[in-house]
Length: 331
Image 1 (cartoon, rainbow, N blue to C red):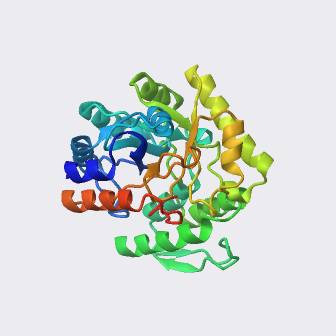
Image 2 (image 1 turned 135 degrees about the vertical axis):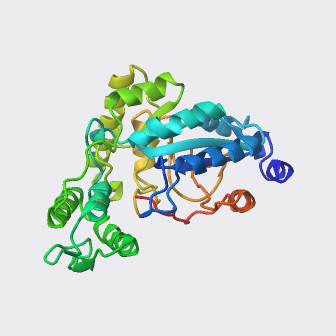
């Protein structure tokens, strides 16, 4: 595969940059989310990526993309949100393979916080009830959330697919209130150890990994006015800079779909004004020289087989100028 990748992503001004995105690496497979990356799969995947690509730190890759000095088969790795398993599970595997990675941290969830989707997921996962009655609660389109059987894993997986889609685009405060109400209806107290501690973030940095900003509360930036969005972006950057004692130059848009989750004519300009050096989206593509360095696309194949995984990366390079693809399973 290396000759084909070399042909599609040569060195220099015609290079293309593949940036892979992850969220979690679980110690063991999760029956509720069988496609979520676990430790064994991540280990295998890192081996593939290392054998095919020249993996660079993302900030270096972004600079070299701009000045036309990328090596052939250039790639970078990234994680979003700040889950504790990024430190506990992913970091040792990255170190074993000798690969750099950037971790984009939503600072409001450090030290015992929890993202809204995890409140919802853990409520459904841990409920002992046979039926989850959510009548009277409303989703993002004003629809009643109804009643849902919880009889087996397949039922719970189906419930989560429906509820995440319905709750996702509520405004931040109503969304939190809604998932808290769902947890109460499920008779569950969700865990408070899913996200990293500040010390774990420091350890990632001391291990040579990069830390980037990802807002404070992981809002849909497109739903905020420009001042609110800038405040979320600035406060996350400032919190990480105070924590690490260094400049934080990378930013990732929450959810990251252009035109839906962030506005390409608004938020990249804010990132630039705030002094970030580059920002990443979740548009499926490979980055090319001359594209907006504040909208670097990211993509990760979901295939479990080596050949299909690589061929999908090849396809991502071929369609490197795609503009409107959306990322699979992004919260």
